[in-house]
Length: 264
Image (tube, rainbow, N blue to C red; front, top):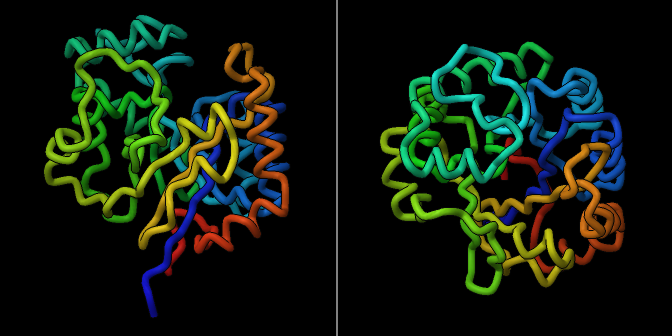
């Protein structure tokens, strides 16, 4: 058998509010979206995990070091710039975040998500903070011994599929990220796309199928008070993943739709 080209359509920001969760579950019913990343301390996280499990969704941790209060602490370096991602980015890029504190908070959020009934198969960080050295170091210290955990590498897989956020100087590039993960036992992380899709949802935002797993990151919007959650593009993303013809179109390209935990 030839190796499978799997596409995991994964929704970020689950567990924050009822409206956003409802949109994710609507997409899950349509069959293309098979995975979601949950903010463990979110107000609706417990209810979402139960509903997602019933719907057969894969669930992962959406590590939050920006929006909500930390679960642990008091910390010296975490939780000082809540809701201001550019300030947190700047402090992470300068090395002002303590990797030991990050590791402690990662463990607490992971354990809390498990306590809600989740069996997480992946992890990504809100606002892509895993691109910064102290956050990646904290992830490795907390969960680097897991050989069943897919950790997002948010690097576009091909030229022309970028449109990444304007990260500050100090973020790790792809080679540096792979080197910095060191001895972490995580399986080879998937190919990643979603920046371009988030601006102009469509199959043209997908790379050509290749053996292994490709993650398509989606943000479906909801009741959050962030302007991003109410941008017109969120409705376009939702419409795309809820359109049954889109799944047939993607499968015709050669992708198999699945979850991170699926075995070829």
